[in-house]
Length: 113
Length: 113
Image (cartoon, chains in turn brown, orange):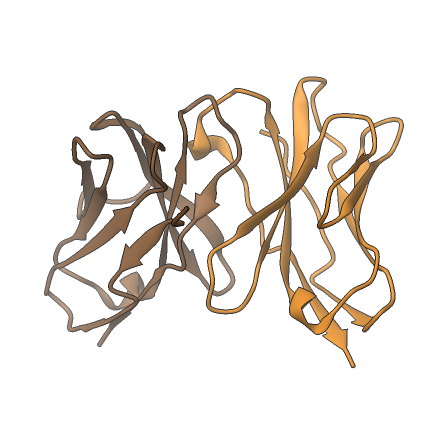
C-alpha cells in the first residue's frame, strides 16, 4: 500500500512569506506528526494530530500551525517565514497514538531566502 | 524519555557486519529501544525495537545488554544501500506522546566498497 506522501518535495520562499505543506498518511493511519530537521539539530517535534485534534505540541512559536482533515490528511503552515525556518519538514503517520512505530514521508525541503 | 548516546560516524566494508552501538544508561524498566535509519533525501525508516531480549528481523538484529544500559544494532552483511544515519531512541511501549522523543543526531554509517 502507498506510504506517507508529502507535497511539495521542494519549496523556495522569501522572508515574510507564508507556506503550507501537505501530508497524506498511510491508509488507515489516523495519527500524523510533524517534525523539523536541520543540520546539527536532529528531529524536532512540531505537533501531532489525531482525529482532527492536536494532541501534542512542541516548543515552536505560534507561527507554526497545523490542522488535520476528516480523511486524516494534514497540513502545516508557517507564517512570516524567517531564514532560520529553512529545514527539512517531515511528516510521520501511525495507526493511533498508542502505536509507537512511525512511518515517515520523504519530507519537504523548505529554503527561505 | 531517556536520552541516548551514539558515535557520530562509523565506517564498514561492504559484505561485512556493521555493529552500531547505543548507550542508554538512564533507560527505565518500561522503555523499549527503537532503531530507525534515514537514507539521504528520505525520511527515517523503522528498523527494529526491543525491550530486553535480543531481536531479529529481515533487516537487522538488536542485542541489548543484560543491564539494558546499552544496545547494538547489527547489520549482518552491509551493502552500499545501508549507508545512512542510524538513530537509536527509547520510549515506553504504548506511551504515545511523540513530543517526548529525543532523536539526537544518530550515527552516520558509511558502507565502503
